[in-house]
Image (cartoon, rainbow, N blue to C red; front, side, top):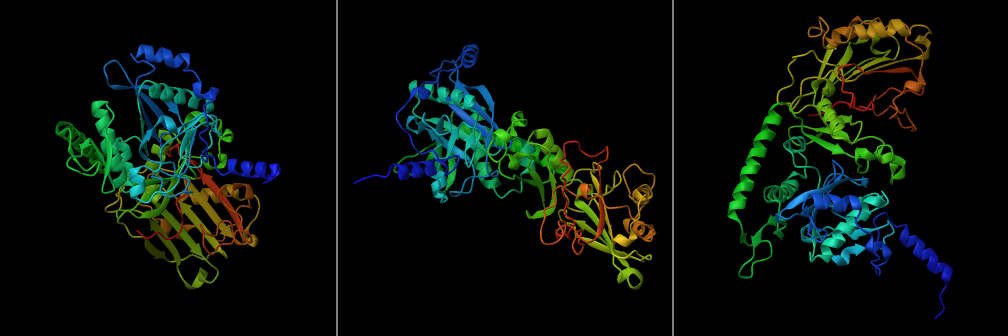
Length: 538
């Protein structure tokens, strides 16, 4: 039968483009398989009492984007050999469930010699072994989920080529020394009380608690936990007897189990203390995964650089575990940026948005409406009305993230931190006929004079509703400055801000945005901070 060489090449090229982690061909070893250990690694092992053939164990953390290699030393216990900054991972925090979801797996995996691929399309790679017994028990689908080089991820953990050479060589040498399978513990984040407090209402928390038990066992013993699965749950250090299913046997080390329980109780006490101090319950929403801050100046050398231009969006949960519309974008992927965004999203000043609108029909016949959208846990959005002053046609004034005074009480049941005096945003709209040049200064002074910023003498007593009534609606607005529009605005058939400010068409209305970042706001929060100006149900 004749073959068409061109057709064969086209098919082969197509297979190579299916995805960053589609790396199925485990061909015969080549020279890359024998990439040597670096002198730096050899020196580090000698200093720590390790040999190249000693067993290794791998731990990864998505949120921190760190990849740890642990190795047994002369004591017979594992010690940290090296932490690699992770170049790229994709998806969100949480386990992989189905093929094509771009999720990098989380859980406990075993890497055997057969899973090593020296002929990877991404320099070097090994297959994590997804789906494992736990994943299969939950209907997980997908294959060839790898750790590889090339800084490109579509469901994998991706490193630089130099990093994967070091990791590959360490695993290879452990296999050569007799380790049948290298355990890889893939976690969403480090299981610190601070992280557990932040993520306490995430739907994945029951799963993460299972992972934490195995992590705690390792932390206590510095030995590899024996991982099993019983009835769809991870189990550890169980011994099956009398035909019991693997992972469903008796506890092989009751003493260790007591130590783990004591550690969990200690962690829970710290979590409760943090919650009591106001740590909000949040979800980190990534555009598509993240990377270690060490690579922040190499964004365009990775896959989907636009998805990692900024850090994750920190979204606020209410008391029932539902997501509110309150969200703050972290400036970066580092812990300081995420912590600052978590603090800002949980502050009363961020969770409160005030919108006052007066239309031509309302100007003389009805009062202006002032709505305070409180997307807090357990609080209700309220509306107040005030007598209206004569209003300019089509005037809308929006005050977002207006700070409360220091010590002001928060809504009942809220998980909040004291106000940090976050980023205020002003917006005003009117028809073009009301605008005249040269009025910017007086306009801003009139608006700013009415805002109850912390530190002002009468901040606590000021009323937003009364403030709106005192503004002079007949005064001209400053001219349009299109360059000051929010950079999050997306073009569409209607106004680019239609979803933010209903019934206001910026394409035909005279408008100005003034983004004011005050000194008490967090420098780690991205200027694209978003709270959502729609009415928010608790």
